[in-house]
Length: 138
Image (spheres, rainbow, N blue to C red):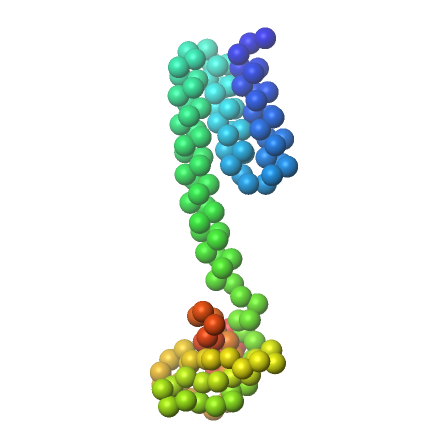
């Protein structure tokens, strides 16, 4: 059997393992093995096959890490509480408030210092355990 066959078989095994785990890192290894197989199919030396495979692993891992870091930020910014109405119980002298939300009292602060203290309020964001309030429904 030709050497590129082993590269492609290893790529298929890694692809099957990736489908079982779902981490995408094994997918990058599978793509790198495919690059090594293509290099072998094009009659490159073993040193070139291994070098191209290693470069594909490094490049794929860096791309995947960058992509995952942007995805993580998008999902952590999203909260099911954003846009929900709250009832302001009291306003404190320092500008913060105590609100009733989901049957419990929460600390809250307005999105802007000069925001009026009357009317309906909605959750714009959460900062730790404190709610950020706005007049506009996000």
